[in-house]
Length: 282
Image (cartoon, rainbow, N blue to C red; front, side, top):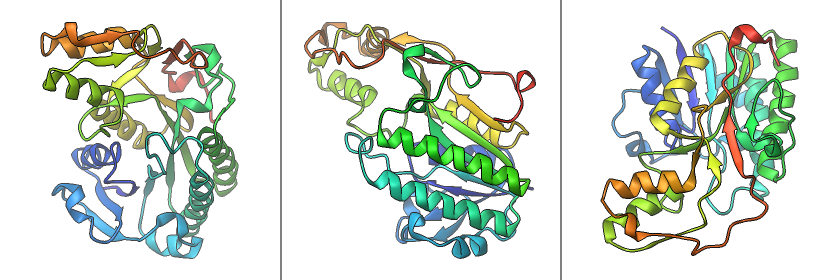
């Protein structure tokens, strides 16, 4: 039975990841802020209390990682509307490197970090680990990309198996109400109009539970380097909104064009799933 240390376990992606790990037969140890045990919603995991995981020393992590086979590091500052330009991204970067150093000292066999599709040059549209350049445009994406660069080099020197999993557009249970899918559901349920852009942008949306299962599959496998956690299929915002509205038979509430399109947003962001046999570590 693999012992897996999971950070960010109470988050939008973290909780379904913890459940998927338990379903896969792993022994899961979740880092938690004191007083937040209820956010695990009763799942059968061990816990490790920590006020701020990004403020801990490598020595603290070396102790915390004793007996751990695999680390899956999901925690990061991600408050909607604030996280992209935040200076907290620097704290997350520094804290992640301390975690990595401590994990190596403790003899962890495998380390899985979690990145974002925003690391890529989004002008490519269809984003591939092998063929799309890294060109982050925000402090958030730049901090993620820098973290991967450093961890890749560090873990190679330590002979530790390392995977960097880039998440795309996720939706599902416990999603922040300020995001698109919860907003649409709330408006439909209330019988209120949903003001939207033209809806022509194409995005790679995936249910968070499916993404968590794919992340765990990759984490417990032997793939190294980077990978995309995505559906591999694009859907326009209009199509997505109509699918949700159809659950309530209320397409009449969709107000396309009420909000201006963001001219700096890429028209297409779709991930490509590469096969492990097609490439080596990256």
